[in-house]
Length: 373
Image (cartoon, rainbow, N blue to C red):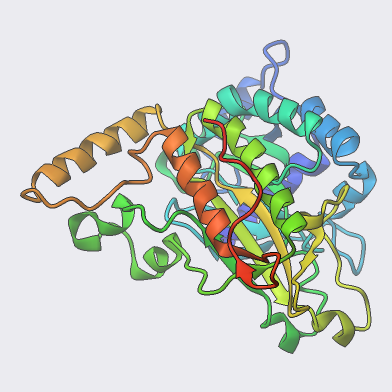
């Protein structure tokens, strides 16, 4: 871990072990504000809406509070230790860490419009949705960390001002022997018939090839499950994406993890499942042929269609299209409407999940009705 990552890790751990929430009644002292402002990497972080996230963790998802805090300590000596950096995994420039026990993933939100959308528009509906649907496949966000006062580091981009802490559905992989860990596979899936301006505008030179290759995954297989398991998945995602449609969100993805079913008999201990109350698609669904175990959650629902940045990029895309002399690249993930994106997303899900029909033949059709829009 480099010095920058180590300092960011220290900031995150400070917020977890010394929880505080910015308050108008208890402003930071002048000296504290000056020190905070000139911080470049180790920014002072606080936990946003502490009681709301604690209710989600304890009452809704049944995550033990003591165990949650201990996840941020070293498992060998029960002391605070650096988080585990896993690099820059996205076009947005987000940095990622895991807790020492791999139960939780920490992702930075470097773009202001994503932070603002989640805090001001999505958080309360998200909380209500999770309260009414504990088995929801929206990824479980257990904490939001933020800088309660302006900092020079966040202004110039040397360190992120916001981080979300969320469940890690890859939990259990690190406890497998290292040769077996390579058999775990992940897919970050979006409707592939969309045109992605981040990838394609200006000859595809807006981002490094390593990032563009990760922008849209392709799943060259089928998720082979029973009709009941598919219906449960589609029904849950239909309900979850209805919330996102009402919030005018687009560009979210289905994150699928799969590992060979044979691993369950090759390890001395059972493969661990993500923390909190379980649901089949979160803890693991075994394929019909007993070849794979699947997990799935819905990720990256922070892009608001009506945000200023989205509208600005929509204008850029339209200008770029006008210069293509009549060529039409097809529908675009960021310029589409939230209801169209939802329909295409659910169609994608339906297409990759395969069940058997009454004659025992593979079929992609289910008894689930078309989603409400």
